[in-house]
Image 1 (cartoon, rainbow, N blue to C red):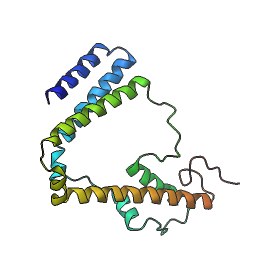
Image 2 (cartoon, helix red, strand yellow):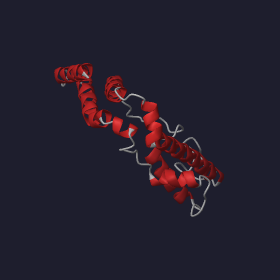
Image 3 (cartoon, rainbow, N blue to C red):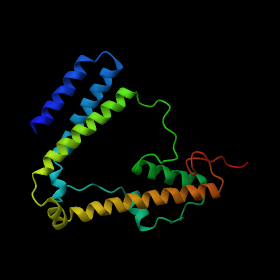
Image 4 (cartoon, rainbow, N blue to C red):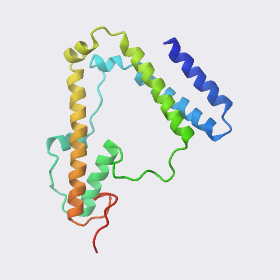
Length: 184
């Protein structure tokens, strides 16, 4: 735990010293990410005891129940709206081009440092639990984690299916893949 505090202080000191340039803004952003994620990382053992659960978005539960459902999806606009809901829950699809205003190298480095710091905090908080895998199984946390992953996979399958249907119906993105150009 002392190591984590030292890393956080080092990031904070670096951020303060470089605040005037882009690298400084990136370091400040990384330090803010660590601050924002600190509580979640420190309370990670609550997930192992199934006292805190990750909430599964409704759109992913619906996809898990029936990934190939086409009810009320007879127009390109409704297919696009459903794809947008899935994008909101899952993040951007792999066919999406990278943002034009992509992050600077220093921002990516700050993100990586913040993620490494939060991972270290999370690992430190969960390492003290003896028999952690058994506790996760007995508390139901392991089963819930598998359910979350299953819902994510079903959401990805549904998004791909809907984009395929959008291509078949000659829709424009987001109801079809971003590279698809409808025939006029």
